[in-house]
Image 1 (cartoon, rainbow, N blue to C red):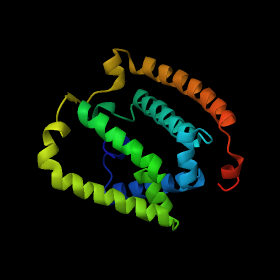
Image 2 (cartoon, rainbow, N blue to C red; image 1 turned 90 degrees about the vertical axis):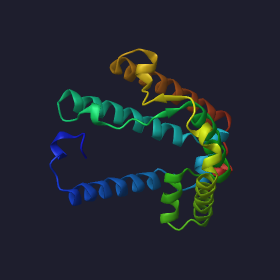
Image 3 (cartoon, helix red, strand yellow; image 1 turned 180 degrees about the vertical axis):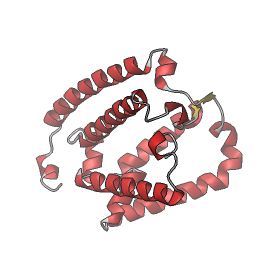
Image 4 (cartoon, helix red, strand yellow; image 1 turned 30 degrees about the vertical axis):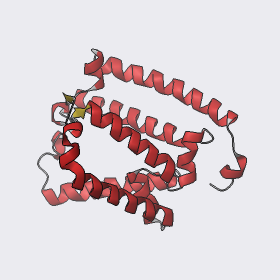
Length: 200
């Protein structure tokens, strides 16, 4: 919990307990939002159910606004928050594979675990497939390392890439989210599937 100053002196066991509580709450929220249903998740790609877009975009905005507020109050050191290193080629290929797996399996790793926790058989098969994919990646890594490590861009942030302040980026993201929510509502009306919605 290092970046949050008020938690920086907590013992490790308490850090882990807080992480466990947050993770459990996150999983519960996923299940309550219906993300344990592969049909609801697949609905995002077919347009008849855009709950995934709405929930995750809302979560991103809340997290972004919350982190900036905590930083303004001196409770969060944003310089200590880890930023993933960006590899262009690996991101494009990995994102394509991830998206294909999402639409074919109806889950992402997080929602798959949430569904497995309530006994979904399709989630178990999905996660076994993910483990097999991870095994293949590890075994073939010496051959694909140049691609995986190529086009390195560093720990790049979108606001830095755009050359704007974090506040301006937050405002831009909110505007984009509002626009996407409006388009999502139009998509649900156009591609509505009452037969599937009744089963969710």
